[in-house]
Structures are given as C-alpha cells and as structure tokens.
View (cartoon, rainbow, N blue to C red):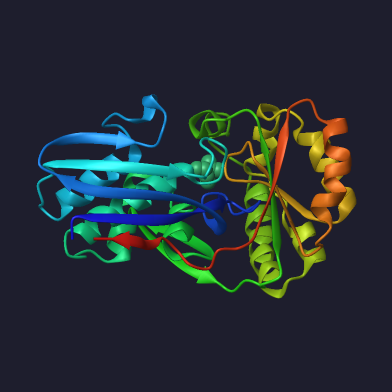
Length: 296
Ligand code: HSE
C-alpha cells in the first residue's frame, strides 16, 4: 500500500469537571491522506504556515515510523480539515492520530491502537482528546507512569451537542497558562464527585442530573475571562435547561441537551446579546473512532 486516507472525528475534552480525563468524539471530521514518496515533505490543503516539518500529522507520522524502525524517505500529506483550528474541538489531536495511523497502516499495521496512543500521548501531554479520537464515543482516561489507560463509557444515544464556535481562537498553551498550579482539597473533591455524576448522567440521558453535575472548579472559572461573551452565553444557556461547559480549553462553548429545539431557541437571542460572532454547529456523538476511508 502506498497511499492511505484517515478520517478522524472532532473531540470535546473535559466535559466540565473531567479535566484532562474525559472526552467525547463528535460528528465533525478531519481527513488526512498520506502518500509515500522517494524524497522530501509536501503538505497541501492547509494554510502555508502549517506546511513545514512541525506539522503535527508529520511529527506524529515520523514518531511512529521511528518506533517501527522505519526510515522516512519522503511523504506527501494532504489535509482536509473540517475541525476548526485552535477552537477546543481537538484539531491538534486529530492530526496526531491521523499521522500515527497513517504511518502504521502504510507499514503493515505493526503497532496496536494502544501503542499509537502511547506515542501520541507523549507528544500531546494528556489523552482526553486522543482517546475518543482513536476509539470514538465517550472515554475517560488516566495516565500511570506516563502510559495512558483509556476506557469507553456508555452514552445515551439521544444527546445533542450544540457547539458555539466564536470567530476568535484561543491557543491551548495560553488557556493552560492561566490555571493555578495547586488547588484546595475541597475543589479536588468537588471535581471528583461532579465528574463521576457527569458520566452517569451521560449514560442515563438524565438532563437535569447532567446540568447539575457539569460544573467544575479546576479550569473553567480561570479560563472564562479569556473568552469574550462566556458569562453572557452561560447565563442564556442556563435558562434553557441545557448542560453547559467549555469545550476542551475553549474558546468553543458546548451545550448538551436532548431538546431538539435548543438551536432555534438560542439562534433568536444569541446574536442580540454577544459581542463576538458565534457559529452554532449542531453535532452528535460519533461512536466510530479514527478509521481508513481510502487506500491504494
Ligand atoms: N484538557 C485539555 C485542557 C484539553 O483543557 O487544557 C485541551 O487540549
């Protein structure tokens, strides 16, 4: 095989209290094609600034090739990214996953998904986007001695995820830099308890429990000043009964509900109360993880 295209779903990390641990795959995709060549690197389909050797799909591709003791002679990479960049929907994780899978599949599938997860987690630093991108669905992860252990959790099929995506970006490094290095025991207990109940609410399809459990004292409160309109939108969403959280490190805000009219209800009010421009993107859970959509 000389050419392979990998489709990777978007992911929303944290889901409120599950900072660096919970994640869910969503129905928005980045497709990346890898073609082996005799020499050099060519990256197409993305802005010029992402076409160098620091492109995450290429970095990940090379890391997996090195693990398999394979030489990278040359590679052409074409990126068709529908996951918006730096918006908290797992665009970086998608490139890492695609690069890892691309290299593995082009070279005889020697590594397991866990092996690819270990390599990409070492690059990303936390597995909460990577795990659902690889496995699909809702995942929770822990890291022991540097190695991620990730499991899928059951998820009620009726949830609707409404992503509110602003016209500004927020680099994850900036959103992590504002977090305190230490937190109180009370806040740790708060997040552990709320996290456990978020998982149960998502399984049961219990909107009221989810709304109450989806609260956090570890990151959202420290990050909200980085996101224009955060508090205005949160207050509006809370009047609808939907659960609300920051998607990953933001700036996308996420509403989770079983109410099919939420988008329509927010559409009427949101533009009147916000300063930035917000796109509303209705999504559902993607239960299939990254997979091959073409090869030759
Ligand atoms: N858990 C990560 C964070 C997700 O909130 O910083 C973004 O990469």
